[in-house]
Structures are given as structure tokens and as C-alpha cells.
Amino acid sequence: MIVSNKLHRESAANIAAAFNGMPLAAFVANELGDVIACNDAAKMLIRRRQWVRLENGRLEFLNPADTRRLHVKLSDVHPANPGKMQISGTGRGGEMAEIAVSRIRGGDSAFGPSGLSLIIIKVQRYAADHEILYGLRGESLTRAELAVAEHLVLGRRTLEIANIRQVSVETIRSQMKSIYAKLNVRNQIELMKVLQAAAA
Image (cartoon, rainbow, N blue to C red):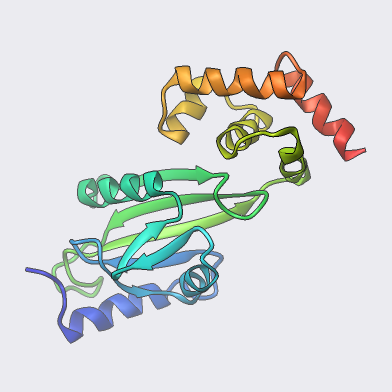
């Protein structure tokens, strides 16, 4: 049964409102992925078209691949197995979003109706060094290369970056090779030195 009656909508609104005042965007969606309630921070993200938008009532990220990942998580999540994902390089300069998806427990209990999912988005600003990366656009780095460079600056390894970006290790290696060639560096340490020099 699809959650749509007034009581369920009020419960969803109360759940989303519980996140007001926190640095989190909270969306409550039904089993079809339709957003039926969101908190103030979520409304602001939508208004600014920052990271997300609503299309026909469904939550979508600005990057279609991230939207597909979210909907896979929504269809796969259950109370014992919340889903998490990260996206970077698609927000405003120097930001990354962490997304957590969980099924709301209860069957018309105090915790809310069954069949609802809670989607939490936490946007984090990178440190100053990461903002410098966005100054490197003049070096003709692509958006994907900038995103990989952000992870490299954080000290992440190739496999970890591939898992976060949901691409193959070979793709990340190719992008790293391109980044290093464009910036005339040979490794992560030299990349950090380029960034430090840009900051000076």
C-alpha cells in the first residue's frame, strides 16, 4: 500500500521537522521514492538547486549517476541495513555531500508509518587546500579530475576513490595520470606541493 493518507503525511512532516536546526537536509520518501516531506535545510538546497532538485516529486541529484545510486539505495535499504553514499565535485567549490538512507521503523507506530525512508544529506566544506583545487580549473582539469584530485588531497587511495565515485580502479588511475600530466607532477606528494605553492 502506498503511503499517501493525511496521517502518514503528518507523521512524515513531523519526522522531517525533527531535523530543523541541525546542519542536515532531511527528506522523507515513500516506497516509490516520492518525497512527501522535508525539513527547512532540504527546502533551501532545493531552492538553490544546490546538489538536489525535485523532479515530479522525486528527489534527484544534479548528477544523474548519483540519482541512480540513490534510487538503488532506496529500493535496497531496510532498518537493519541503512545505505550510505558520498558525492563530491558537484556542489559549489570546496564541498562534498554525505548521504545516508534508512528505512523508518514502525507500522503506524510512534516512529511513523511503515514504508517510509529517511534521506539525510550532510554537506561538508573542504579545508582551504581543497578550495585551491577549484583555482586549478585554469589548468584544464575536468570536473571528474577535480573530484579525484580532491580525494587525492585527502590522502585517499585509488581503490577507496573508485568505491566512493562508483567507477573502476582503471578509470581512477587514468584520471590520476591525466591530473599529474596536466599539473606536471609525478605523485600525490608533488600534487600537495603544487597546492601549497598556489596557497602562498
